[in-house]
Image 1 (cartoon, helix red, strand yellow):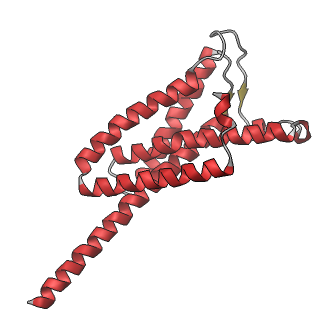
Image 2 (cartoon, rainbow, N blue to C red; image 1 turned 45 degrees about the vertical axis):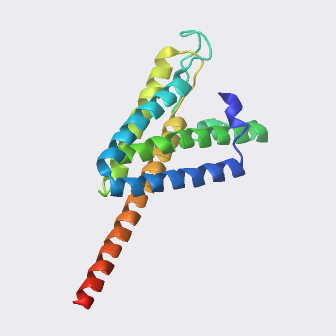
Image 3 (cartoon, helix red, strand yellow; image 1 turned 60 degrees about the horizontal axis):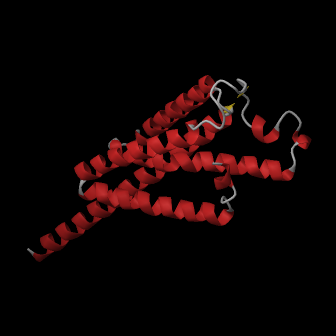
Length: 197
């Protein structure tokens, strides 16, 4: 899992953002054309992505019950520590990459969640964010109970939730853009017909 962090660079983050934007907006286009099928596909993909998240976050790095029960409750504590001068730049860079990975992991989850709700509604990003928050808290709780080499950190919850919010926001924006375009096209056709009568 840690090897993935070495692949996180400004170029890969930008590429990921562009791919997620394109996929979310393609989903928005599909949802506007066929909400029932798009919603079913989103539910299947959401279940698969959720299973992938659980596999990535709950796979033990050592035997269950053999690690301590450390919990980092203070936001930014893992990044800055008690003494900010105590972290080497490479350590701080690795923690930043870890938090970017935490956010990125939940961007597709939030996007897919928004399509399982009715993404044309304004409350969808808030609902998707609440689900992402609950899912992230559940993961951290299971990691704590397992005590299998995973660290329980409030920053993980915050960045997971932020990623879910970003994913939901982009998906809902895509649906609304295509809805406006469709309404605009409909008005244009109506005016043309009315003018021809």
